[in-house]
Length: 375
Image (cartoon, rainbow, N blue to C red; front, side, top):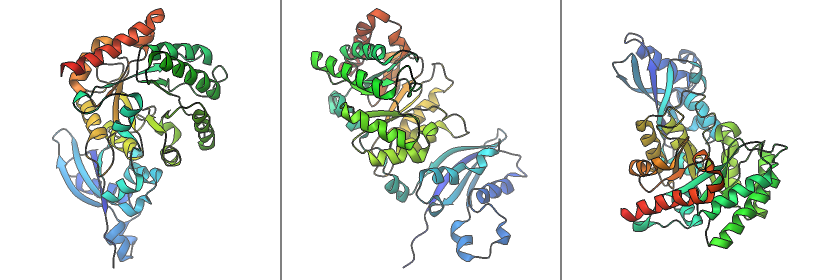
């Protein structure tokens, strides 16, 4: 019995004139599949099943065209790096092409598995209620680089005393001499646990992974010894295959994805940060909120949150984490915009309180809790 051929429907925005777009679309379909003249292929199966197909072309009336191309699922080998390669590998070199979206067959979702814990799992870990009493989760970041582990731990302990749900390392914290990973995980993990014991809270500390695959594996094992169950990783820095390998090897750990380097290629943020990071196992995905220090629009942020949370085969929802220069003054606005299925991240805006850090953190938590009660 022949196996049905499944395809990914990849959507590109191509800058072109109307006379050239049909040939340009065909060229990209070939580039992203067989990468050679089709006339030179005499294998019927390759021609019928592997060569990319132009499914539609739409004139956007702004000098660009929306082009939808069907790419054979088999070409991905069901491997993360190859998936991205088939979606946008060579075409990313063309400055007139942007990868805007992709619709995946069920085979892809089953193969990669998505979040192991997702929205419900992260809520449970920090004690955030679900159902009719659901509230947004809260998060902050340990900064700045250069502080020793013990100093970062003091900040973590004070935030935990304020009742925040998650405290992540700044993504720039790695395994530097001034704050080695193992020492930082030990100090910060213990500071947070001590605060939880004193307050009855359930704050989670999320250390940042760095290095090669073997180094990250060792870091994860070290965190387990400290009772840590969530980790920060930048998939585009670490590599998509590395990220997915860690998700599979350590299914008990929650993974929060950071967007560093995610803007280095012309891939639409809702697809890369929302959909692809979720597909590969991100339980939560951080992205720049509109109106912060980055240039994302409200429409982009809304689409990204929808990609993280929306229906995607049998995959669990991934928590959207808007961040990037947020302050307490914007909490109500952000909750109105995103609703309760979100994790709000305020880093420097809390740390600026200095000696009043615990009080400022408690005010942040109080705003979020109070908003949920009004709904």
